[in-house]
Length: 323
Image 1 (cartoon, helix red, strand yellow):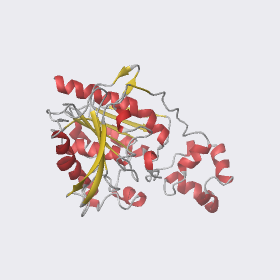
Image 2 (spheres, one colour):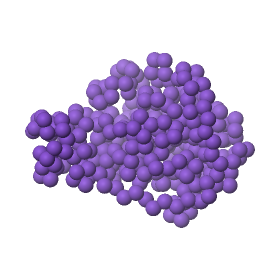
Image 3 (cartoon, helix red, strand yellow):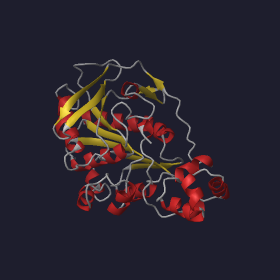
Image 4 (cartoon, helix red, strand yellow):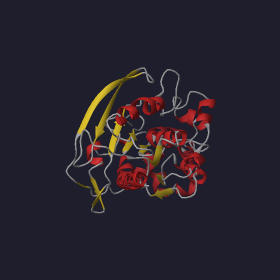
């Protein structure tokens, strides 16, 4: 799936047979997933393992993916601009959108959130059901967010890690962020945060792990995390260029690098990436905020977590700027 819902490509997870209720098995028998219907009982097992991309379809039929979208309230949005620039790191032209919070615009000196999109999405669809301008104009629990700018950018489908001929990570760190800093955004020490959904959630963690002196805080919603290269390659052959690339940029292995910085991670209990996120949670430094809640790898779950993630980053960026 493309757009705000991000990927629905499950990682290879061991089956939890307790989740395969009679209703779900009946749903399979009624033809809810064509591949499983053809394969019969063997197909159910493949879906349970994550080899076939049908588990969330079954959960939807059983209501397991139903998540209430939050009732959103906004202040009057600030300025927003979209444009493009040639990325030497990606060897292509990339689009971006930069949004200012209410009451701010060009010339304002503000903390910066770099929002990374999911697989198949782009700078226009990085958020689930929100524009960048709406995101920084949110009122959460009746209160406006701490003032911060937010930028989105086209990262392609290479999982935000370096690939031969395409390095979206370098594009963000060496090209996008300096462009924003020249505008007065994210210029003060430790006044930049990363945030992302799915593939972008992995990317947000990766950049924070790689650049501890640059990134002050990170929020990852439903990060697309695998525990081994074989899992990643089986689900998405283009996610990592090689086993060595996976080892170098494995978010779980390098999670201790996040020590001393605010971290928030959220994942749905029925998300196909959930086993990887559980492994990540065990590896994160103490003090990290991890929320496991009912839901799947869908836009409704992403949208339910965005207000809390933005409020978390706003609070900690404000604290970093005054500390």
